[in-house]
Length: 204
Length: 210
Image (cartoon, rainbow over all chains, first blue to last red; front, side, top):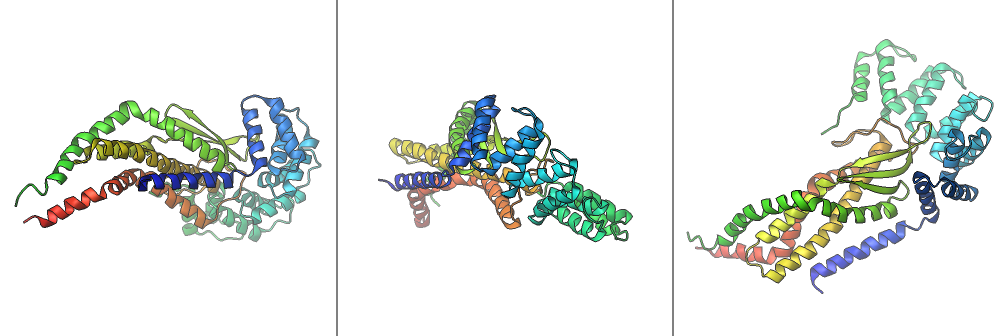
């Protein structure tokens, strides 16, 4: 066999090996198939598959099912079922579920409104580096929602979210430094820096 | 100095002036859709297997591909991220390679055919890999929500944790290689690999020239 032939065969084997190694997640495959069915309008089959996966403890399916119960998509709206599935997924560290569970507690969706509980879930996510949770947590500390008002903590989480690229956090942080707030005296340089970050164009 | 020792290189240059524009024209007028179709098969399979945790399908709409991501936007009601991909620029590697092979003087017909077929197959594998790197970068861009290289993310936040700064930067470097460097240099390197003996002979001929 020629060198080019050997090269091609090596490349094909490498591709096949990586395909076999990465394609072993049977639950993920079933989950993707269920989403595909929903997308194509086969609601009954898609929902049945999602339900089976959620029952088997697969967190992405639990989250998806919970959100479908919340919105009444492919299923009748049911707040208590939505909360149940989202809570199960959140306990498995599913990012989306933790974020939405916090919002359920703030909104009182399927549960008595309890901002303090919402903050607990937000904090978990914020500590894992999720910028939208960091920004919401900052907002809670600023306005004393579910937690004692604490300008220093609000600033700390606002900066964390801004550094993680959260545009709204960058804009509001620029505003904080421009007018003074959250225990800060006005600082035009910082204000300009964060305003520029919020409007950052492509680098090159 | 005699013109004879330089003639293979001059012939290569002159033939390239003919074949490269011809291949590029053929690619642009007739072959790009066909090449996109071939690449779509490999990339769709790669997305399904290698990026299954972030995407569940690829749809081709003329010259644009839609990546159906399983990553959800932080919106109510929940909806998935759909990315529009422009894969056309990656197919330019093929006409460049074909033009170089067809312009190479002194190749037997069979050898030229073998280079065209095997080279195109290798390029197909390589360009498929480059497209997968590009897809991974586009997903990472929208996950991390920070502008990187020449790309900007959409304004929607996804319900997933960001990549670490180092991984994100490396994906950006991969994007530069996949989009800017490899589609142009890969055909040239592949042509050099196939014809290095011929080039060495020419070089030695030039070296021996009085």
